[in-house]
Length: 105
Image 1 (cartoon, rainbow, N blue to C red):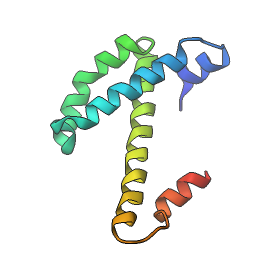
Image 2: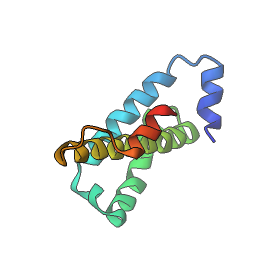
Image 3: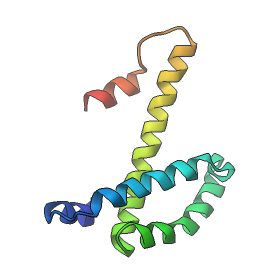
């Protein structure tokens, strides 16, 4: 559950959007690294990256939560984009069923 960020949202924290913007930027950078291609190297890298999120995204607990939520969001966005791109290459114009379900949620 997003306890820390929901609390900040409810309290109108003006920095919350900036924390997520920074986190998404960092995740974009992480996904471009060669280490992101395997689970083992990605896990090792993320252990090192956690400190960055804590220092730049609201502190220890908020930063950890934002790291996870933004990372999950980025991974599902990447998969959805890959499914749509795959369909374009196969000649299909319809988005994948995964993308269709996600876009209606």
